[in-house]
Length: 103
Image (cartoon, rainbow, N blue to C red; front, side, top):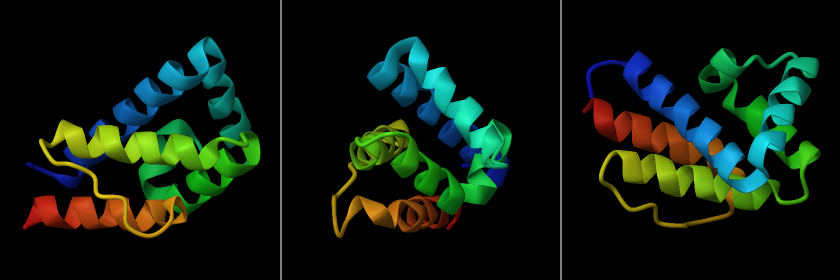
């Protein structure tokens, strides 16, 4: 892992892929909703709590979407996501992964 920016870019790309995989082209509507809540796509890594909350508000399957994002993100780095706690710990899981890669 070179920089925080590399991680953030992989995070955004993974989110893009999961939203499209789960919601199809309608997944792009989530970005419009996020922007209406003052969260721009490129700001998601810095506003993970807001992103997670918007995802929950946008879709009843928000927890499932967050879990799939985490599984896919961990997989990008050759790791297996271990579901501990609730998916509401989305930001904690992302921070833990980011920190483990920077060591």
